[in-house]
Image 1 (spheres, protein in one colour):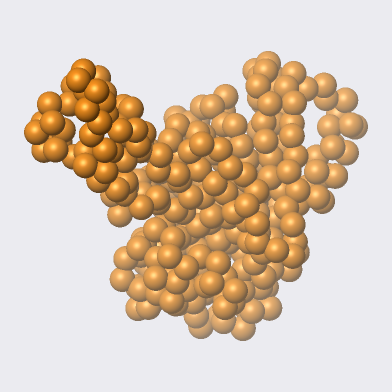
Image 2 (cartoon, helix red, strand yellow):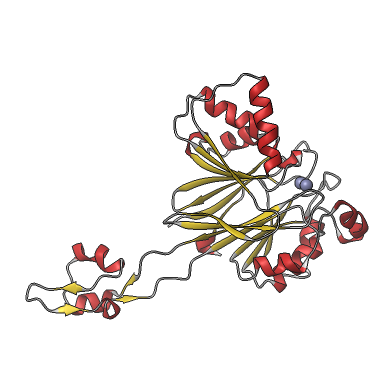
Length: 306
Ligand SMILES: [Zn+2]
Ligand SMILES: [Zn+2]
């Protein structure tokens, strides 16, 4: 089952000639999700061959421009394409007000329905669930209300024990039912228990998106145990004071969060435009946590292989 993240933008605040503001595409079991939507996201979607029409949900971490300025344009393009299916947007209340005011004055009539789901500033909660995955939001610590998100897949199927199935002469057609946890009954009415034919399924994978936040114990708690963590690393640690004033984190702090939260892999991004080369940021995060990579634009991380 696919579970992969594609980085569309990794810049903080202002874009640079080679880096775009925050946006990521996430695919979980063929559900297409967009996380944040900075300026230029539409062009990045087409560059990396991700179809606008496939996106069913959009999660916006907060109202700062580098995370949402691409959203009105994206919604309007979906309208120009005469989209029919509704879209779900998980975001702060303020963003709904901004968007609706713009759509009112631009006299935009949508061909599809936009369903807004408001984020709760004070608690961590499950904000979406279907048969394939759940999404949890958690507040982080920034200048305006801001949220992180944890996407966790559901593993519905047990793993077939090939050897046992051969031994009991289980026909291949019965595998789907057995994977779903059912016992097998042969033509003589003999029941073979599911537990004798399968193994437990692999633990569900999870991805945490965590940007625009101060280093904080509650963030570490919230992301503990996820497989892949995306964490902002706006500055190098020599600008810690600036990071604290702007309510951002340093690359070193991102590494500390990953190490303490015992994640499998860390991606760092949301880099200040002051850094042309990013290797120092990577080295700094690596000094705290081994398995870290830069969230380079176009990079696609498959959670099944980390
Ligand atoms: Zn930002
Ligand atoms: Zn921000």
